[in-house]
Image (cartoon, rainbow, N blue to C red; front, side, top):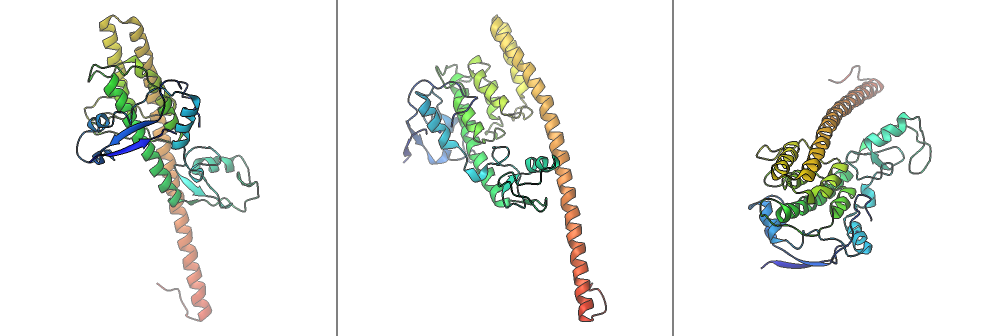
Length: 317
C-alpha cells in the first residue's frame, strides 16, 4: 500500500520569490515507495504524475506560508560559509578552527587580513585542511533539494507543457524554486530524460514558465547541459520563438527571442566559469602535490636525524 503523508509546507523569504498568494500550503500527498529517488525503474514524469499534489506549485496563501516553506528547506548553520552565507561546496578548516568556502577564505587572506572572519582573533598561519565530513553533508543537502527542485519543475512541465496540452492555471511564479535555490539546491541534476530543471521548463515553450526560468538563471542554473535527445537550452528557446512567430504571437516571439539572447550570454559566462574552475582545480592539485612532497621530505629528514642520534650510521632506504 502507498504511504499517505500529511505534508505541511513550512520555510526564510527569498528575494527572488515575489509571488506568495493562493491556496494554503498544507497538503496531503501520496508518495509511492518507487518514487523516493530519481533512479530506478520507471520514468520521472510518471513519478511526478503519481505525486501530483505533493510536487504541485500553487501560489502561497500568505507570507507566513511562504516563510514556513523556506524555513523547512533552509540548510543547517554548519553547512553555511560564514563569509559567503551560502551552502559550502569546497569546505576547508582554517587555523581558527572554523570551516569556510575555500575560495572565500583565500580571497580573505589575499586582501591582507590576518584575523579570523568568525572570531576576529589573530590567526597564526594560513594552512587550510579540507573538511570532508562537512563536504559530504553539504553535498547531500544540495542533492536532496535539487531533486525536489527538479520534480517541481517536472510538475510545471507536465501541467503547462506541450506534452499534455493542459494549463497549470495559477502557480507560485517560481517562489518555491527560488526558496530551494536560495537554500542551496543543485540545479544541475538531471531527470531520466536527461533534462535539467531549466531545460524541462524551456521545452514547454510557454511564457507561464518564464518567471521560474528567470529564477533558475539568476541562480546560475547550467545552460550547457543537453538532454538525452541532444536538445539544449538555447535550442529550446529558439524553438519557442519560432513557434510563437508561426502562431502570429508577436509578444511571445519577443519574449522568447530575448530569452534566447539571455541564454547565449549565460552560455558564454558558464564556459568561462568552467574554465576558471578547471584552472583552480589544477592549482589546488599542484598545491596538494607540493605539500605532500614537502611532508615527505620532512619525514625523510626526521628519520635520518633519528638514525644519526641512534648511531645507525645512515639513512634507512
